[in-house]
Length: 253
Image 1 (cartoon, rainbow, N blue to C red):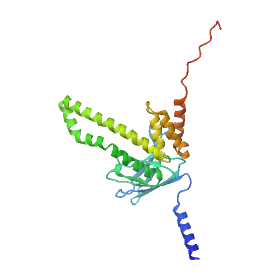
Image 2: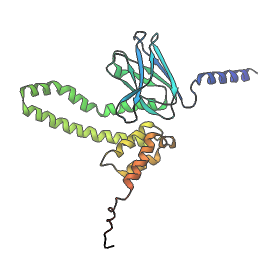
Image 3: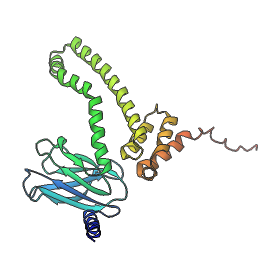
Image 4: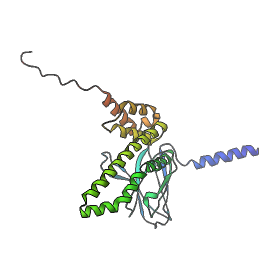
């Protein structure tokens, strides 16, 4: 009897913890040190991708905020804190997303709680490591470049630019390799769909490689907007080029 009671109790706990239904999301935010009444805006790109639209707005209360709504597929959104110079990017999807705002450095805010956001955080960490050499060069030589530009020292300027270009190329190659490697090993990640979509926007894209990556994606990703866009783009790229328009009929025909 005790075992049955324990099992029932565990079931009740599981049911009560599952606060999010199908196609629903909850954003549970912490805003430690941020005064009451500050506005938090949930934003997404408009249909044309040219601007941002406010989807929801709430106020900070006792260092916390919460947003609820419906969403049928993962998509990139941002959180804008009133007065902050930067936004917090994250993936809005079915589930409970946790956002801890760092008021002193918005870029250091933490997003977690769902598979895609955990993957996004890990992916960003890995890409940052790949691009570290480039960032270090910029930080190390910023003052020297500024001085050279002010004194019109073309020798120093050209030398720094040449070195920067070399490192930039190295980092670019390493970054692309990282993107492909990630997509190959994470078929269920929304990031992988975005990577494949980005690959196809490159004029030098390897169509066969891109198609292979697309085919390996989870079916749920193929039904998202990026997934459908990839399918359409692949079909366009694989279609035979038009032989030419039909010649207009002449009076002699």
